[in-house]
Structures are given as structure tokens and as C-alpha cells.
Amino acid sequence: MPDQIFPEPTVGVFIFNAAGEMLLLKSHKFPNKLVVPGGHVELGERLEEAAIREAKEETGLDIYGLKFVNFQEFVYDPAFWKKRHFIFFDYLCRTDSLDVKLNDEAEEHLWVGLDAALLLPLDEYTRTSVQKIIEGNLS
Picture 1 (tube, rainbow, N blue to C red):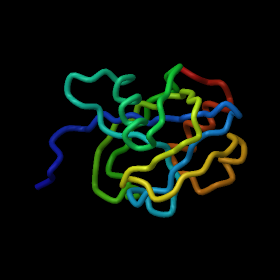
Picture 2 (cartoon, rainbow, N blue to C red):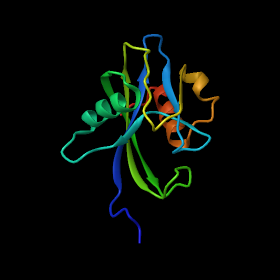
Picture 3 (tube, rainbow, N blue to C red):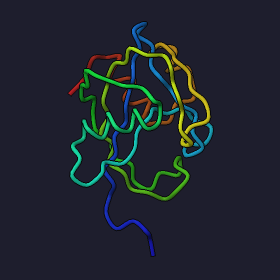
């Protein structure tokens, strides 16, 4: 019997610094892939509130200027460390700080330009959103 009853709404946070570089994380939850901070939307929480909270919890960064990128369905993809059905809501945003303080959900971080990011081992969902950001196809 699965421990998940319904799909879980989650946010992905594409954080950009003043130099236009994006924050990527190495997380055990997506083995051998780079991802962006993010996580579950809590009951009573709006998507943008979840993005701000998750960014702060996972990176220690304060973010602003959220802009919706897209949503993606994640249905039992083996790329994740557990069998889960997520609905990703991705947001682009800015930060004025480079002082990243990771919690236990990520082991490493790096700042990288968008074009350079596409040359790295991004997970499929992060790659899709990066391509949309580069093309300017924001919803």
C-alpha cells in the first residue's frame, strides 16, 4: 500500500544572484543530478509563500521578485529516491546574497550561468525549466 494518497504540490525555486547566475544543488534525493531548491506546499500556504519558505529553509537565502515559470507533472519517476507523484510549480526569483547555508537536503551548491547549466547533469525537470527561462517562455 503506498504511503501517498494524493499527488503532492511542490515548488521549485530558480534563484538568481546579481551576476545573473543560478543556484544549483547536489542532493541525495536526485542521485547524480543537479536540482534547484524546493519542496512541499503546506496546508493553507500559497505557492509563492512556499517558494519563499523553501528557499530560506534549504539555502538560508532571502528571495524576491518571484515570477512563475511553469508547472510539470512528476509521476513515479525513478529519478527521485522515493516513489512519488508530484506536481511541480517552478518560480524564478532573485537574491542579493551569496551566503548559502544548506540544510540536510543538499550536500553541495554552485552558482552557474544559464547556458553553462545546460552542460551540467541537471535532472529532467530542472532542465525543462532552464530551457523555458532561456527562451523567455514564461507563463
